[in-house]
Length: 185
Image (cartoon, rainbow, N blue to C red; front, side, top):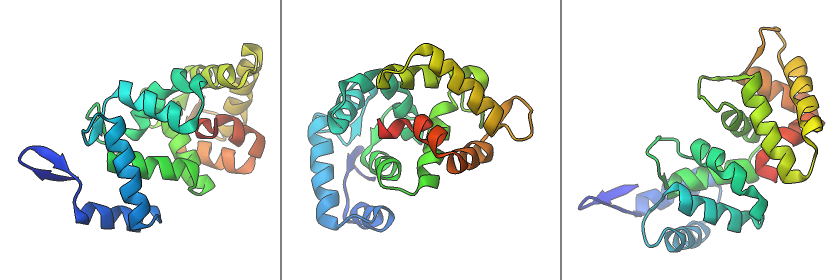
């Protein structure tokens, strides 16, 4: 985003970059931006609390509060502790109308809680437990999904799942792919 006197401003260049990268019209981008500004109390950035409120309202699902911490972490690509409009829009569009590969790339980021570019069993277990609570599936089933994903996706059997193993696994098993895609909740 552009900077003017230490504050963020939404420039014409920002609009054009977002139009090109999002596939949305200039008018749509401006409407989304105005809504984002309103929800961020007139700022061009949202903190985690504002994001949680905005995202659950946008998705019209109050059960999502438990997972929004993780979604915030994924959307905050510059690790600033806040999300600017560009970060939000690109990530939101990729996770809602993007290709299956894009969605699974973001889902990988969601599952990679410690951000070490691999998913360990405990990370998969934690995320699947949250997702299953949100969709009303038992914790026993969450454990079964964890075991199934760890066995099915870990093609080299090193007890971790790489980004490519995760995305490929999701693309080849639509049932597991649907379960791990928390952005469809």
